[in-house]
Image (cartoon, rainbow, N blue to C red):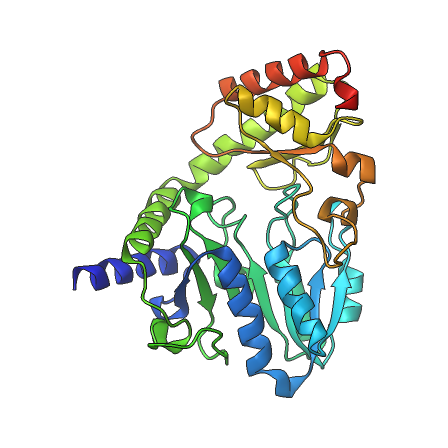
Length: 342
């Protein structure tokens, strides 16, 4: 009974954060499963309405690979570009029609931090008299920018615990009440039959507590991360003139992406790792085509800039002094003879 209480307590916390009812929240093993369940579950349950999916070229692999698999099964897929991180809304308008069953678009691009106008996509769906459901991968947006399910107009929202300092292995899917869904995991009927499998009560309880802490300080923390982002961009520009900034200050507050032309990003990551500084190489997630461009190239970067891209992620726990240490290490690396050829 104690485990059940903790699960439902966490469900209520997440529902409150999204301003929905607890019955609309389903627990999963993470953001990837939430994306998979949303896309496959919605498409299979509503295939009588059409066989068309619309998504963007900038999505996470959990979305693009799931949709690619449906394409192999005969679904028509339309990809909307996002040059420079700005979603082509005219192309989105042309792509959504009465045969469209699902539109899947991320809230925050995980590579450069661009924010996509999810509510405007919902407006297009309505204007085009489309039956399409709107799925939003909000893994990078949840706890980083303020939003509600009704505010963005999404019917399905995927989130993950570890992006807000919860424990890895827990996620959730919001499914708007009344939406017809097909389950992808059969078994004992947990999560009201949509996602069978014994719930991990410790992970879910930790998720709920992470949500409680995150949303108690949300606005203050967003302002703090925004200041860190802007400070970091200025510091890179001032101290490393060769760097190319791929993010901008209109994006999410917790992501800065930049390139060091001629430098392989993996070598920089390894160098910083040896100093206890952890950032990531940029183009980790491939786009919609098996051997096609990386997500960064789909966003308009050249192959050279994509191959040298680095991503810095902030949390409310970071301070300006952390950025100073990072910049000092980057300047040190760039001064190593032959670093451009590494």
